[in-house]
Length: 198
Image 1 (cartoon, rainbow, N blue to C red):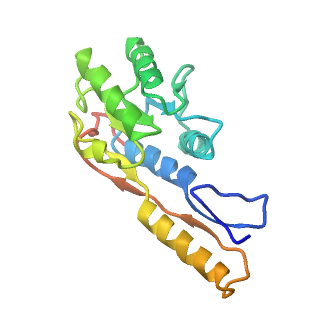
Image 2: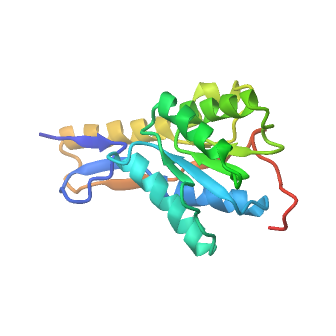
């Protein structure tokens, strides 16, 4: 049966897929925050049982190691793409005496909740806390502080996936297609440069 898997890289099966390069995108987020001078960077993860959640965390960890930046105990909070858990994670991070200056959050819905928690506790965004999300959902641009985030090329992914499937159905394509699409960082108002030199 002709098939194309969308938004999941299936390396272990001989089938076609089109997915997002979550790992590289997460690395780019860390590089961006480091260029702004941040060193104390935390992450609120998605569901680590999903490829997207795990790859975004792996990219974060790899970029921090590449930059020789330590990830403090408790700086990685698991939230499973759930807003309620993101709220708890934000509260935990903001209570710390050594709270981070920046947080990479694995989805926009969770990141917007982190903004709301910070503002409710009198922590200014981005003056005291920079926040980056992931997805570029419509909610991102309309948050209380417009959210810097990673835009997924969902339209391209869907189009390429359907075009590939049609070619398979019509017998014009017999080889397996595997394509990782790049994501793009979209800068808004939720991040700012710190006083530290990058």
